[in-house]
Image 1: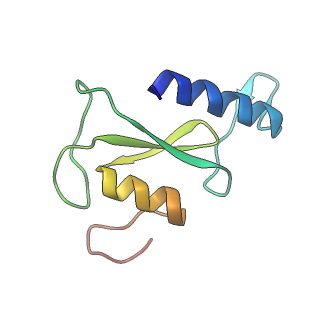
Image 2: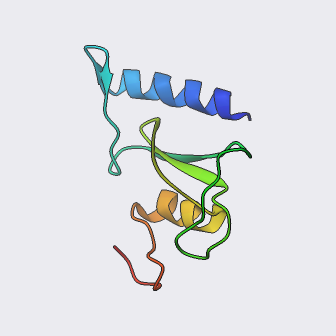
Image 3: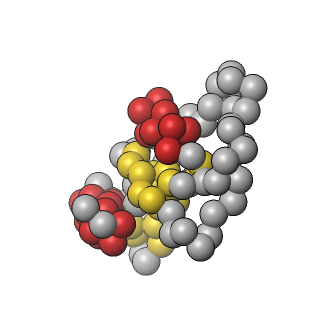
Length: 89
C-alpha cells in the first residue's frame, strides 16, 4: 500500500470519527495511530539511534512524529515515543 493510499484511508477515518470540522483537522496520540515511509529526500536524524529518519507516525491522519522504523513502530503500538536514553516520555 502506498503512502497516498494510507493518507486517503486516514482522511476518511478521521472524517467518520468527526476529527475534521469546519475545514480544520486535529490529530491525537489517543486516536488511531499508523505509519508511512518518508520520502528519501527529506530525512533528518533519528533521536533514538542517530540513523536517518525513515518513517512518519500519523495520529488520525496527521504527521505527529518521525524516526527510524523501530521507533515509529513502538510509537504506533504504545502511543508515546521512546527517548534516546531508552526511557519513556
